[in-house]
Amino acid sequence: MDVAKKSLRQKSLSPLAQSRRQKRHRLVCHNKDDLCMKNYLNKHFATLQTEINGMKAQVSAEIKALQTKAQRQYQELNFADLLHDSTAGSPWLKDKSFALYGWAANYSFIYTLFRILDNVRPARILEMGLGQTSLVTSQYVAHNNPAAEVDIIENDTSWINIYRPRLAAGENIRLNQCDIEFFDEEGQNRRYNRAALSQITADKKYNLIIVDGPMGGGQKHPRSNILDLVEKNLAPDFIIIFDDAERPGEQATIARTQDKLKTMGIAFATQQRDAIKSQFLIFSQSYEFARYL
Image 1 (cartoon, one colour):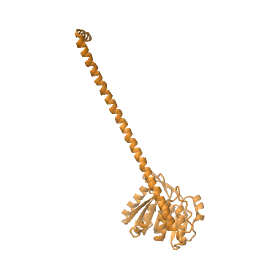
Image 2 (cartoon, one colour; image 1 turned 90 degrees about the horizontal axis):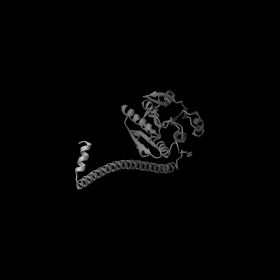
Image 3 (spheres, one colour; image 1 turned 90 degrees about the vertical axis):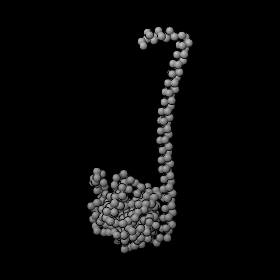
């Protein structure tokens, strides 16, 4: 129908019919407006609901992180008490002036190490990384088990100069400087002591290996020295302690170490101790009792 015909038809309608027609038109328009508003409100509500759900998830994650932090702090205080009580009457741990904060060893680490040294009495110790733990291992050899040996590996000469005077002295307490080597492996840049370390460890078999160096933060597979050491220098009776076990990189290295042990057919047990930092322990079956120390 063209415009002229439409206009003629409207004029031919009675005033009453025109009024009814206009009312129907307004009703249709009103219904359309209601539908548009409903669609708008539904869309707006959906957007708000998505934002609210996101905020809930964020708040939930933050609460969980705070709970985990609080739990770790509580455990750290607990290990501090345990360390104080367990070392109070120790005849060989004479120097207890530890600085257990920041990147240094924490209370759970020192407590665990002390209890292992005091009860397991390992004959050969390899310590990767010089620091607070070295104050314990050197005193163990000097004052508790002079027949035992400890090889401490460190790359930083300045750090060695600072710490050497603090270590207990003894013929079987050896502090070794090894430069860091950089190389690519599996598309990742790795760094650790390799050639120099093998000269020091040679064919020695260690009962206790402490994996706390070199610096491993932010690396995909840090401190991978342990893989070579497991293959060549692990005694039948052994304990391996990994520090910083809460970090993804160390977790990857720990997993690779367990895979290596399985490939070699070596039975073992594990334990993780959590405080401000975490330590992961791998025991030979003969030393599995150490999990209860």
